[in-house]
Length: 339
Image (cartoon, rainbow, N blue to C red; front, side, top):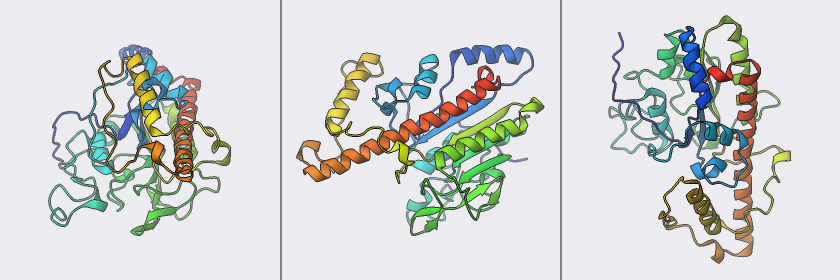
């Protein structure tokens, strides 16, 4: 029997992790359980998104899907994060401390005095079980789409950690359009589909769209057998490198010309009005290497404003595709029995 270490449930935030559920869904789920039905569970992870990007947390970006879920459910205002990407993912998917799970640091940045030490294996180790393994063993279908960043070897990928179906980018980042990697260590991104390593991607591949398409198809393929499902949608958006289909590129044209200082003040004002932060909250100091936007040369200011526009459109694009998933769950009658 595998040893299971329990150190409590860690609610980790991957710069923002959206675990949003509808109060109506919770009530209906309780009724469903009384009839012997277990609830479906969908976990949505946004990669490198600030929580105030969302309209429901004071942001100006158009996020109607996330806002509707948040306003009908729970908005957390006190939460904590792991130090970086894969350590946080290891906690989120196992409910244990990241050192117990084997990722004391991101493998790419493991220091010489850490490498080879217990707790710094650089992949999700076997000292922990995943929620997918526990739920699979208790009658759930288990699905994974998006970025993994918890190991690339055959015994470390989602199919080896409890997920029966997957479409997964194993690297920590990569192009939104093809298999181009973003580092010298991984010039070609590594993908798996249903546990098999891919040599090429679909011709119409766009990361956020394809992940959503696959997840919907996984749910659809098994939905008539009556079993509940546990699904993780953890796309790349809005993590760099920024990439969008052409019709999304001008969604926020010139809307960030004011620069980041004015934007931060506007968001803080809205957050106070919404009760997200207390009235006496103050902006934290800018990071030491970020200059005031007003001192930037015009060309530099235009470039930085354009990056902010693309970032905002990436967030809205993610919201759009999650909206497709929500609409599908409503269409098949599973939304009210889904956390």
